[in-house]
Image 1 (tube, rainbow, N blue to C red):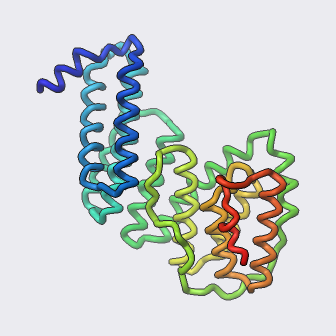
Image 2 (cartoon, rainbow, N blue to C red; image 1 turned 30 degrees about the vertical axis):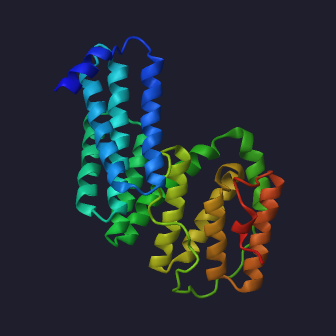
Length: 287
């Protein structure tokens, strides 16, 4: 109660407080550091503390400050989803589902249409489906994320000419029978990174590829990843996307065809000046 009262006295939503903003950023970076160190007990405690803090700040903000109250509510949703993913990574599906449901409830009743939050919710939903072996349903949800991102970047006129130009690097080749082995995919189903737009689309693409392996439908994943690169090479040619796509080439095509397609990807990367650290040369899996 004392802690809550203290925050209510300090928070003045009509004035910017650089110190409070800085302290908030430090807390978030501290959580990220503990995630990288795999201090999961500390991570869950810190996230729960931050969630409580956003609730306190939301209550302390005057009703007249609609925009500020909405911002704190959105922050709470993001933190609830991050906690849900952490618990999912620890194997606590029940608790993970609880926090996801809470985030979904707050979003449904209090937030208007917000594309970024909606994408995060879809990603969390897909990961929960994935964790319970519901691969077709998870793939469907991930497809919604990928399609929405593809449509949003395809409307950028600056890259419209480049997108057509990039298509010439891809040639159609007959697929070999799907192999059942899933070796070579090095990215876990659950990505613990900063919650940015890049995190969402990269995680969606990676998990879609893994779903394809479990469903023995690698050809669909190959087509989807190639289409994304056609739409916007600079946006989608990231290190995990290239690594997974090249791995799928190795699993799907003959060695000669796989090498040829990977070299095409290299040409696209060179043409658009996409290089390390965005894409590491080892990710092309060329000997």
